[in-house]
Amino acid sequence: MTYYTMTGIAGALIVAAGFASAQQSIVIGHTLSADSHYGIGADAFIAKLEELSGGEWTGEQAPAGQLGGERDMIEGLQIGSLDVVITSTGPLGNFVPEVYALDLPFLFRDYDHARAVLDGEVGEELLGKINENQLVGLAWSENGFRHVTNSQRPVNTPEDLNGLKLRTMENRVHMEAFSQMGAAPTPMAFPELFTALQQGVVDGQENPVTVITASKFWEVQDHVSLTGHVYSPAAVLASPIVLDALTEEQQGWFYEAAAAAAEATRAEVNRLEDAGVALLRENGMEVVTDIDKAPFAELAQPAYAVYTDQYGTELVERIQAVQ
Ligand code: PAF
Image (cartoon, rainbow, N blue to C red):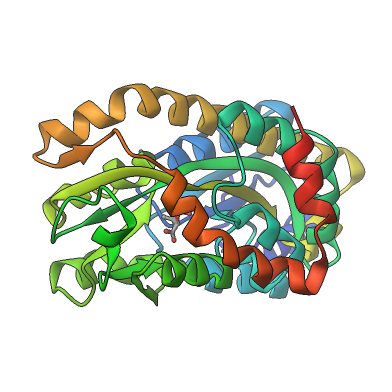
């Protein structure tokens, strides 16, 4: 087997053009551990790609932010230095502003609602918007509903957030929502977060149970509150420079592989929604499960203007109307 160890498959393709039997290889970058919901998705992508291509294509994961934070990796896709990336929508709105609509607080009622939106017309349209911005949106995957963790105190009401230095994603909607809810939002790339929590640079952070467990945040955080303040989708993205160099059939394999990745990731999100809280408690975290979300939602409402002042309310209303 000839194996080209290059980061970009564009390079591998050039080499492969002269050696028809060469196996072609992709790298899938993401910020979480190899056994996280993203890692499971990346493995499913690679397995499907190998299957569809009859072994002609293979791949490997670059987990744990080895290739940078999510914003860096999205830029890498745009210039063709990366092949495929699994990322939250957190930093994606900086590249594709319409995607900010998905990050609005308390917008999605539950997982069924969120998945129906992303698998339907709105999701399709937003993938199209991604494609207009030097990226290829292959599929919508998932991160989960986000919850607050911190090292100071249990959060039961918005007053408990007062003055908490909370790491957020580099996302204007999230930052505004947390300012309105009384916290002090501190945007930071995820690869820097564990150390920042450990050293007390920030008091807390917010992420789904999937991420809290995969990142073992119990080592540096005592409290979790199931605020479910934002549904966090994930996108499986590819570089247009890489995809454009492929045949239509090969491009189809990438789309099918991304769909398999999303399915496997959602299955792991489901598993951890059931088993995750027990895991957090087993590892010593105090988990507040019974939260009245209404006062949080009321305070966070002005964050909608970050999106709607510029792009109007149409997309938000369409998302809300999906059953
Ligand atoms: O908090 C974040 O930055 C994201 O939720 C994460 C953990 C990188 C997953 O996409």
